[in-house]
Image (cartoon, rainbow, N blue to C red):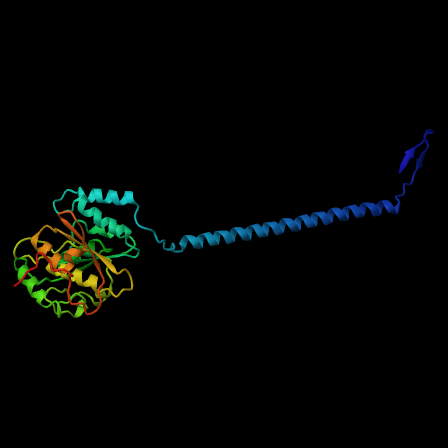
Length: 314
């Protein structure tokens, strides 16, 4: 370094740095470099980890969205929903409908029926979709005498399970037919049997084989239609309901609820007393008869313990 003294004479001074000072500065730079390296490494690791977690979460979310939802088993419909359905069904603008007083007992039994409940209905009626909706967790099957209407309902409502049956009886002959069946009560028309192989005149035996293996918990007789003399009448439906209820194997419920609509009409009342039995009648309101039947042992030879008051003879 060159400088000027007080006399104006320039002189040169030499500044020497001690090695310790150089060494100390280099050490500080190394520490700073090491700190920056560690900080950069941690930052990169954090960035990589965060990105992988995000991708994993996104993949999982996408997979869950595309997967089919797991089935949810729900309980019976809430009471207020049932009440609303019954209200609208009973107030529909049609003459072919059940009243609220007729619908309510059936709906109450369906709601209390253990899931899955097997519900058999004779007749495709105004209430068909109602019965299917009320038995939300169970199986509801319908039997109708009109094959075209059964096919139409299945096409329009794929969730409906419907079968068609060709009845061979006539309403005007119901007393003679019932008397003839009672004569075969210990043979072809016994109360406990496999309906698939039955030769009884009132037995419905032309449904799919698996139908007869189902243990029905509730049976509603609201068909076939018609009150004119040549209409088929409901004799076969009532007889078949009585046999199906008594022929349970005992794997599920031993009792079966059987409802007969239009119970006030002679054919329905007489057939119900003969094949469902007065001692099993738990409720009636004029239009609807409610029976509860117990399973019977193989070899049972009579439908009723007591002779029906309206018993028919040939």
